[in-house]
Every structure is written in structure tokens, then in C-alpha cells.
Amino acid sequence: MSKNYVNYGKCSAGKPGSTMEITGARFNLSPMSDQFETIILDAIHKVDLSKVWAETDHISTVYRGREEAVFDTLKAAFVFAYKKGVHMTLEATVSKGCPGDSDSDYTLEMDEPRANKEESSVIDFPVIGKFALYPMGSDDYMGTIAEVVNEGIDRGVVTGSGHYGTNLGGNVQDVFDYLEYVSNKVGSEVSHYVSQITLHCNVPEGDIK
Amino acid sequence: MSKNYVNYGKCSAGKPGSTMEITGARFNLSPMSDQFETIILDAIHKVDLSKVWAETDHISTVYRGREEAVFDTLKAAFVFAYKKGVHMTLEATVSKGCPGDSDSDYTLEMDEPRANKEESSVIDFPVIGKFALYPMGSDDYMGTIAEVVNEGIDRGVVTGSGHYGTNLGGNVQDVFDYLEYVSNKVGSEVSHYVSQITLHCNVPEGDIK
Image 1: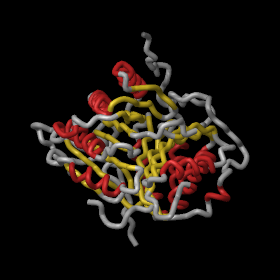
Image 2: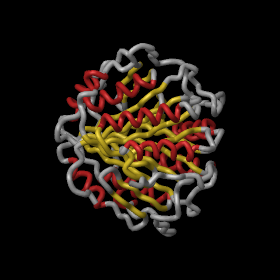
Image 3: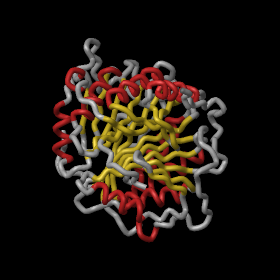
């Protein structure tokens, strides 16, 4: 039996596999409710996907396209899944410039990339969470991370840091604005970055220690 | 008002902030059930933490210590939270060698690091998921990733790959054995790596497209 081994040998650090400036997000919604299927499917189906390439399978959902369109659809999926009182976690990987990427599976609409803005911007609620930033193939990555973390402190959405992550807190709209700034800033400075994000809403009262 | 800006200026790529070979995992359990609090707290409290440093806050839980002890406790938290028929997602960041790390908040027990082995090894169930590997401060990171992905294909636990991740599937014990191999292999080759993991159990039948 032949196995489909992978070979990334033609990839070089510093040289994005896609030449099209494609940003992508792979994410999971986890509403901690017996109604999780309905909540997830209703939200996923409500998102206007006209400005991104999208795929949902058993494991996760992927959106690919312009940075503005990817953040617009990712935020829409999360806020459309919000239910008062239902604890939910969003886990998202946002990435751009992977040497293993290719000029496929994308939509790059140049006009009006934020198809969900009108509907999603009116839904606001508090979130807490964390993110970690991985500028790849760069020696000076800690300096880049410090710069965007300090901007988050100025904006009031970076609330501290712990092992393996920087803590986030604030209204979901402000936190998403900040996360898009992070991708934009880092994407303009390094050829390949990954931003790993976890956001929680309706966190139960009381410390779970 | 003074702000607590961060400064990572003294960190250098290739030089781990900790000299103690500390591995760490930061993770979230998301049981998609109205009983999520009980499920999470019961599991977290059942884990024998005698061989790791541990902290749980509103956002996530962190274990730090020897690599074997961290994987032992991480797997224990996940399998102890398993309930028949309850869809659950584990999101975990496993990391070693961060230049911003320090020789603090750890337990490095040298003998019998797998305190939960007896109880956790008898719980087995199918999982699907994905992982992404980020060898930091290295130019040859795609080659390292290809090597461990091919080992996963040989073991039968790597089931494919998509944008921004490599797909996992199999019994939870085999998948955790493989993820520990990945950390061990990559940790021996690069000074700083991050392995970002998502695992799902009790995934609803049917494609959720």
C-alpha cells in the first residue's frame, strides 16, 4: 500500500507559497449547551460568504480571502452564534504567508470586503480570552510581539499575560478590531505569521480553581 | 496612569528563557452540554497534579514541568472529562523553549513523571482533530514539520491535511502518544517550538456542511 507522504522540500522560509496575499482563518465554535448543533449551524449558515472561500468539515471551518473579509466573516460567525447566557468558546487560527500555501481556494474580492458588517457590528457583548502570535522565519520575533501587545495595552483590550499567551478582555467588537490590527501589523512586517486566538463569552461567575 | 508595557528586548531567538527544559501546556476543555461546568471541574479536580505546576483561571488551565508529566496530565484532563455521547473539544497549546519563558512556575520531578498513567490509560475512545506545529526561530521549519507528519502517516493517526493544519484521527491513546512524539522530536531539534492541538470526541453523525 502506498502512503501519501508529504514533502515540503520546495518551500523556503521567507517565501510565501501563495503570491496572492491570502489571509485565512480556521476556527471552531464550542457553545457549551445541549443545543450546540443548532447554535453552530444557524450561525455558520447566517454568515455572508460572498467575499471569502469557505469550507466546513467535521473538524473545523476555514475562510480564505482578503484580510478584511476573513476578519469580517470570522467575527460574524462568532457573534451570530452568541446566545444570552450560553457559555461559548471560539478557537481560531489566523494565518498568512505560509510557505506551504498555494494560490488556490480563495476569493479576493476587492470591493466591499466586509459583507457582514451591518449585521454583525450591532451585536456586542463582553469576552475574555487570549492570543499568541507566531511570526515565523524571523529572528526578531519577540520584538514584533512586544510592539503589538503594547498597542493592545493602550487600547485597553490586553489585560495581562501568562505562560504561552497574552490575555484579552473587552467588548467583542473592540477585541476583534484589535486582533485585525495585530494581523495587519505583523503581516506587513514578516512573510509568515500565525495568530492563535481563544475567546470566551458568558463565562460562569466565580473562579473555577 | 502608568501602564504595564511589556519589553521582550532581552530575549534572543534561539535562547530559551528557561534553562530548565520546562515544557508547558495551556488548554481548554469545551464539553458541549448544559452540564459543562460539572464535567470540566470534575475532570480538572481528578487529575493528579503532583508532578506538574498547575494553574486554572477563567480563561484556561496551564500545566508546566517535564514533557512526560505535562502530556500525562493533559491527556488525563481530557479523558477524565469524557462522557459517553457528550461532544467535547480540547484546545491545547504545548510549548517549550520560549525566549520569554523563565525558570519559574514549574515542577520537575525526575522519577515517575506519569502520575495519572494507571487511571488514564484504561479510558479510550475515538477522536478527530488537527494540529499545527510551529518551530520558532528556525529557517528549516517546513522540513521538520514534514518529518513528523510522515511519522504520523506511518502510525495511522495523521489522516490528511488542510489549510493551516494537519488532520488527526484515531483512538485517543494513540493520538496522544503521537503528539508527545512530535513534541519530543521537534523539541530536540529546535530551541523553541509550539504545537497547537484541537481534538474532538463524540462528533455528531453527518457532515455539517
